[in-house]
Length: 163
Image 1 (tube, one colour):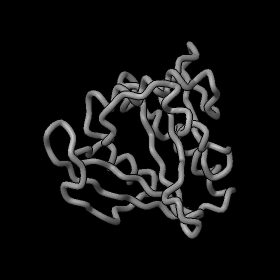
Image 2 (tube, helix red, strand yellow):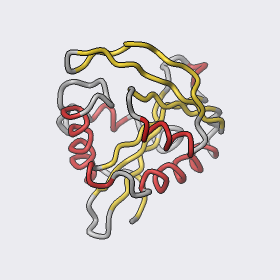
Image 3 (spheres, rainbow, N blue to C red):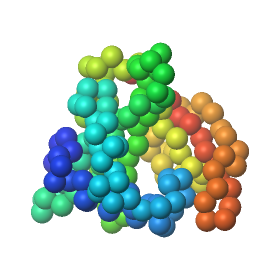
C-alpha cells in the first residue's frame, strides 16, 4: 500500500468511493451523487498546505481510500482549524488503512500551522468513533437529529484533535 497526494487521475476513483457512501449510508449528508466535474470545486480547495487530500493505493495501483483536510469554516479566524474526513472503498474497511492515511495527514498538518482538527460523525457509527478516538480525537459536541436522510433524522457527534 502506498499513500500519496491526490492527483487528477484519482478524481474518478475518489468520486466513486464517496458516491457509494452517499447512496448506501447516512455517513454523509449529501443525498445526490457527484460527477468528477461537479466535484471539481472541492478538489480545487486542496492547495497542499493546510488543505490536503491523500490517497492510498493498493499493489495494483487501485485507490483503496482517501483522507483529507479542508476548511472548518470560511471565516479567517478559523484558519488554524481544519475538518478532516476519511473514506475507504467498502472492501477495504477494518484493515488498518485508515491509520495509514491519517498518520501522514496529521504529520503534514502539524507543519502547516494547524491547531485543531475536527471530525463530524453521523450516528450510529461506532467503528468510526473508535477509530478517531484511537487517532487521538475526543468527543466535543453532540447534535441531535441535525440531518435528515433516508426519511429519518440522524444525530452527529463532533470530535476534536489537538495538533
